[in-house]
Image (cartoon, rainbow, N blue to C red; front, side):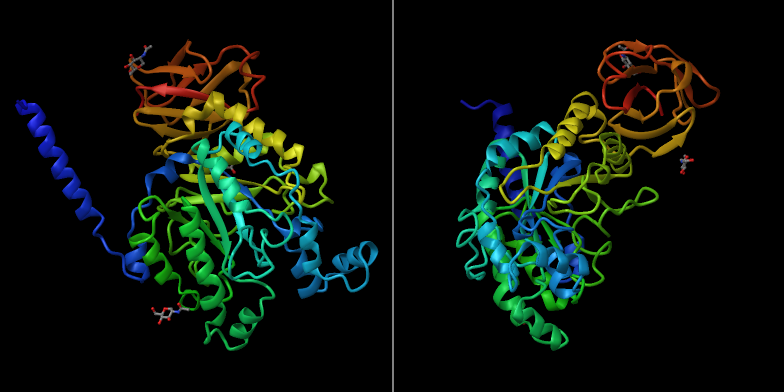
Amino acid sequence: MPSLASLSLLLLCVWSSVATSWGTRVRYTPDWDSLDSRPLPAWFDEAKFGIFVHWGVFSVPGFGSEWFWWRWKGQHDVACLLFMLKNYPLGFSYPEFAPLFRAEFFDPESWTELFEAAGAKYVVLTTKHHEGFTNWGSPVSWNWNSVDTGPHRDLVGDLGAALRKRNLRYGLYHSLFEWFHPLYLSDKAAGFKTQDFVRSKTLPELYDLVQRYNPDLIWSDGEWEAPDSYWNSTDFLAWLYNHSPVKDKVVVNDRWGAGCACKHGGYYNCEDKFTPGKLPGHKWEKCTSVDTYSWGYRRDMRLSELLDLPTIIRDLVQTVSLGGNYLLNVGPTAEGTIPVVFEERLRGVGAWLRVNGDAIYSSRPWHVQSENSTVPIWYTSRDSLVYAIFFQWPAGNRLELTTPKTSPATNVTMLGSPKLLKWTPLGVTGLSVLLPPPGPPYRTAPPAWTVRLQGVA
Ligand SMILES: *[C@@H]1O[C@H](CO)[C@@H](O)[C@H](O)[C@H]1NC(C)=O
Ligand SMILES: *[C@@H]1O[C@H](CO)[C@@H](O)[C@H](O)[C@H]1NC(C)=O
Ligand SMILES: *[C@@H]1O[C@H](CO)[C@@H](O)[C@H](O)[C@H]1NC(C)=O
């Protein structure tokens, strides 16, 4: 005999499943007004930190950057010409690098272990960069894909399987254009009035990627030479949001045609490495690279050209404080290894996040983003908690925060320790916190600390 409570529970379930099926009946139309109105799936804002991976045939020459082919053959850059003359036979062509892309040490499990240890919640892999080489067996990239040549392996699929086992979200980077594809060049010569390249290459590959790999995110790029009407981006996105197998969870960025960045799509990247000056009204992501000169692996990189750990953590904190996600790039080698200097940076971020992650994951911007009191402070919040993050230890162990309004019930702790810290009000607003004396564990952690405030406004 069902009780009244279980009956009403049943009714509630029936009602909510009806409501859900009504909900999914929202149909997006292929125009920006409609597509831009789609709410961003919540996981993305909660994730805050992801790893970007640029990997492809460009990892073989590993010279200058992943734009090597373009610099060499498109721009006739002297450094690239000399590099080829000195190191390769005369007449050596870029496609001849592909068989040298072997990925013989590629172990998706150990990459994934590293990304998880870094504290990342999602990973974005280049499935195809502007060179056009696909890291999966694309049926429309004949002989220019990682299954037919080079690694002879489905790199996109193998990494995805490993990430899923550890519950990391999977993002697929995809370049709309290709520098030297003959159909792209002929469409371009026709002022993008023809769409032969889009019909036979771009769109089939985008649909194939979605259906094969069920991505959580599509990181579009290479859009800037042609309008979204050439790429048929709005048709693709309407399908993605209405009918695709990932319609409820998928997140996309803003690079879907010339002029779309920072205006249309899902979250905004705006430009590479873009940071807004103040809190934007739209979800955004900062993508940046440990190697400041390149996204792809380059054999000529030097230590002094890399972001150091304090810089990375400061950048991550400021980005999150301003409502952004932080997507940090590493370039694996053609052999399939992640250079150990990148690994060291990533593990360093993870070590910091293990102590300070409460201030980052699932946090929200506070009503003030930063202030300069005794030392610069960046704020985040979560429910009624406020986090103040700082990168310099204040003189006399006295940290002054001028914005929070305290009450007698306010209490203050530091992440990494449960101990309540002594504090005194500064005036109408603000407080002065007596930090524990310098020494372990706080001063040995990577140089950023978090004070947690409970009961402030
Ligand atoms: C692009 O979309 C238009 C309008 O929906 C359609 O007529 C055209 O066939 C599409 N082009 C391709 C290449 O899919
Ligand atoms: C804090 O100081 C830095 C450096 O002087 C300055 O660039 C920044 O705009 C200041 N921030 C605020 C919130 O006043
Ligand atoms: C800290 O402050 C909050 C809000 O004022 C209060 O609910 C909580 O009990 C306090 N915790 C301790 C350990 O005093």
